[in-house]
Every structure is written in C-alpha cells, then in structure tokens.
Image (tube, rainbow, N blue to C red; front, side, top):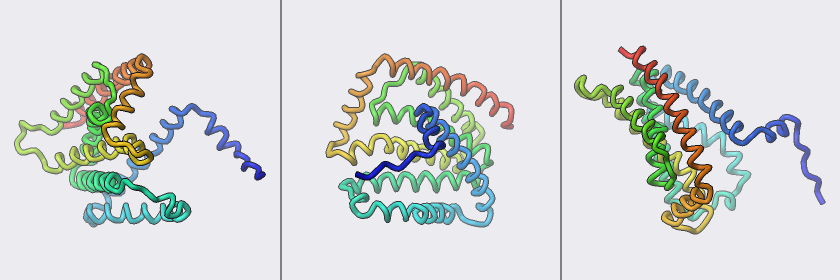
Length: 239
C-alpha cells in the first residue's frame, strides 16, 4: 500500500484557513492581476488591435494549460455537453474582446467603472437562471447600481458612446459566463436537463432558507454601503 504524499507546512496552513477567506484571497489576487492586465492592454492597444490582443490572450492561455490537458488525457476531457462548452467559449470570447475594446478606447477609470456593472447583472441572472433568492435590500442596491450606470452613460448629453455599450455588453457576457461556472457543472457531470438543474438548485436553497436569507441581507447591506462611497467618488472625479 502506497503512503500518501506529506503535505508541506505552507499547504497545511493554507488548508486550515476558512473556505471563504481562501476564496477572498484568490479573488483579490485575480483582481490585482486583472488590473495589471488592463494597464498592459491600454498601453499595447495603442499599436495592436484589440482583436489581436484577445487572440493572443487565449493562445497563450491554451499553451500554458496544454500540459494539464495532456496529463488529463482523452478520458479527462471527454464530455457529452459540447454545446454547453461551446456556449461558454463564445460568451468568454465576446466578453474578453469587448472589455479589451472598451479599455483601449475609453478612459481606463470609466471602463473599469462600467465593468463594475457585472455584479448588478449577476444578481438578476442568478434569480432567473439559478433560481436563487434575493432579498429586498439586495434588489434596492441593484436598482441603485443600475441608476449609477445610467448616470455614467449620460443619455441626456447626446448620443451614447458606442464603446460604453460595448463595455456594458462585455460585462453582461461575462456574467452569463460566470453563471455557467455554477450551473453548467451540474449539467456536465450528470445527465439532467436544464429545468431539473434549476429545481435542484432552488430546493437546495429552501433546505437552509433562514441562513440563506440572513446572508442575503448581510450581502445586500454591505453592497449598499459599498455603493454609496463608490458612486460618491465617481461624482467627484467625473466632469
């Protein structure tokens, strides 16, 4: 019988952290990486077309992941849900190319601000696609967020900048892609249809309804508190 590989002290300390804290650390690292990426895209976009940047972004990504795919082999990559995977690929490509176009052609601060509309779309999509429950406070925060997006679009100032619409469209595409990370694994790993997947998700929420409502209220309250200084800051810096 083979002995399990010993876990290093660093790995052990990492695994002892609460799951939420580990998730926060990963998301924070990803946010920093995306911020650096936007700066590079803004600089490179002066001489390279966003379509080319998007192509090389995915080309380099598939190259870096190739060893993992090779190790998994055909059995690890086998799936009966090619349509779902192609849909995710399409949404990710549209979202990535759209945000690159927005970053290159808009002020970086504006493009980033419009990118923050993603959580707002996520709230709506989570209700209709994942059948999640959203508290009244979260809905109020979402409405306030959309109002801020409309103010930034400045519809009364004339024709809306098409690059603004591209930025919002890219955020929406990434929302649907992000939702697929939650909903698609159920469909990929099990032979169930989309409706069954939604019913199972809704039933899981009802099993722990009070806890879900409490956390929804906490998230909604924190979102409102976050929106107030965020849009106040935009009011100060935007002309």
